[in-house]
Image (cartoon, rainbow, N blue to C red; front, side):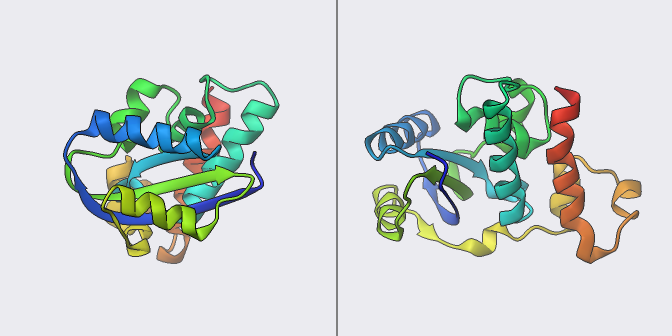
Length: 170
């Protein structure tokens, strides 16, 4: 089930977030894949999400997972939080005009499947929304003094550290 990870950034308009999430869940079930969606403004890079998926899969394999599903475990790791009540508002996609990040996990995740998915929700692919900056770090909860400890080219490492810390704070 975890042979392939695809990360996609997209822009669009989400009218009803609850319905949107239910339709994503249905699409995922119908195609035997896992899909998780995030507010792209909270994502620093594709590596941020790939690391989150790898940590989530490992926690499930080791039976140290906190949640009942891979989707929610990915959400926890990507947020750097231990509790869903903190992770969901922090990382969850919002109603209206949105920039979203999607993780697709499965045996096979063909490009056509992703294209069909984006089309179904009237979203346009834009991987630029996955490129974070200092502002992303601040929104994520990093303090200025933490950010100053590294050079700009190492900002992504600060996020990866937060992802890895979830194992310790569990």
